[in-house]
Image (cartoon, rainbow, N blue to C red; front, side, top):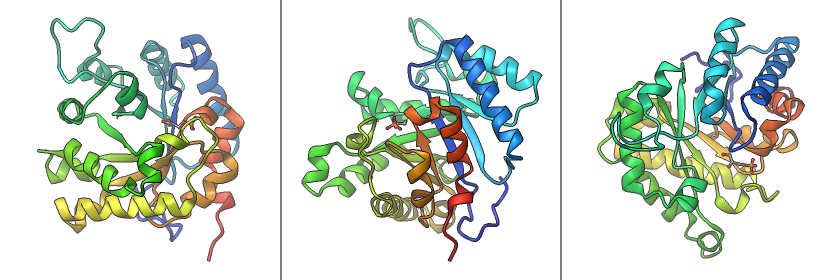
Amino acid sequence: MTTSTNGKFDRTPLIAGNWKMNMDHVQGITLLQKLAWTLSDARHDYGRVEVVVFPPFTDLRSTQTLVAGDKLKVEYGAQDLSPKDSGAYTGDISGQFLAKLGCSYVLVGHSERRSVHGESDELLNEKLKAAYRHNLVPVLCVGEGLEVRQAGDHVIHTLEQVRRDLAGLDAEQVSRLVIAYEPVWAIGTGEVAGPEDAQEMCAAIRAEIADLYDDAVAAKTRLLYGGSVKAANAASILGERDVDGVLVGGASLDVGEFANIVRFEQHLVTD
Ligand SMILES: O=C(CO)COP(=O)(O)O
C-alpha cells in the first residue's frame, strides 16, 4: 500500500461509493465511465487517494470488462458475500466468484443487511473469514442506531460489534481490514455526524484494535466514516486524524459530487 505524503495521513485515504440497489449494469457502466473521465481530466492520483465502487452483483461482470478494457484505476467490490464457498445455498454469492470477477473489496455487515436481513455478528464473523479465504479485503460496517446514540451508549455498542465481528481473525488480516463507522441515524437522512463524532468513534475503534492486537496493527487498519457524506462536508470529516476515508451512498450516484469527494484534498484546511 502506498503512503500519502500530505502530512495528515499515514494510511492511504480510501473513498468508496456504495451504489446500494441502484444502477442496472448499463447505467452502472455509464456512471463508472463518466467518473473515470472526470478523475482523469482532474489528473487524479489513485496512488495518493484510492477510489472504490460497490455496484450491485449484476453489474460486476460489465464493471470488470470496462475496468480491464480501459485500464481504469478505479477498484470495485461487491456489497455482500456468502459465508460459504459453494453448495446448495440458493441466491447466495460466493467470495470465490467475486474474486474471479476481479473484486478487490467486499462490504460486510452494512446496517441495511443487519436490519433488513437480520444478519448477526456471528454470521458477519463467518463472512469476514470467507472474504479472507478468497483474498478479498472486507469493509466491515459498524455503528449505532438513534436510540443507542441518544442513550450515550454509541461507543460501547460499536466496540462490542467490532469485538464480536473480529473474533478469531489474526493480526495480518486485521491490518488489511477496513472498518466503516456508519451511524444508522445518519444514513440517507441528511443528518451527518460531525467531524468530531467521526473522530471520536474512529479513535475508539483504533484503540480497541490496539487492545485486541497491538499498536502496529491499529496503525494500519483503515477506518472510514459513512452517513450523508457530500462534497460539502467530506473535507472536514477527512481532515480528522483517525478518519482514513469515507463510504458514500447517495452522493456516489452523482459523478460530479463523488469526484469532488475523491478530490477532497483541494478543500483541506492545512495547518
Ligand atoms: O450507507 C451508506 C454508505 O454505505 C451511507 O449512505 P448515504 O451516504 O446515502 O447516507
